[in-house]
Image (cartoon, rainbow, N blue to C red):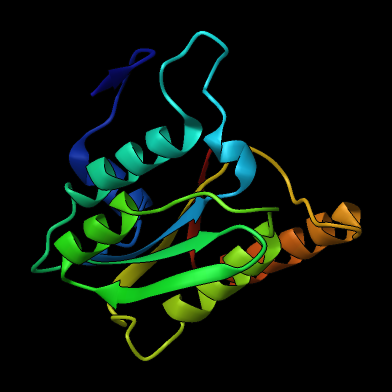
Length: 171
């Protein structure tokens, strides 16, 4: 590797950088199924947001290694629905395929409940815990304070990060 006239030998890199090498992943797919996800991606698009999220989630799951990795699904709107961590990745894809939209958005509850699953007895202790959040927006509740829920979401995400969970947001 040559960068800006400095030659970095692999031994130099390995001596100075020791990132953990995780043998497997425990991934919680956290998918927004609120009403706005039924909207089209753009006004001229033939694809609804929920369908794009389902396709992205399925593509991701298909790239996991079932002998090493686990996946779970937490879909959310005003409530959350959980499919626990499993190596049966086709079961996750089947559950993703039948997601339908409902009302309101509680990202705070989704992050909290997904993290609870990543901390459960089903979590493989040698696996990197990962949360992949697919959403199109922010918290929304009927007759409530979205600002408070936004604050709760930051608190939940921070707690997950402190616990070692990698969070990837797509939306």
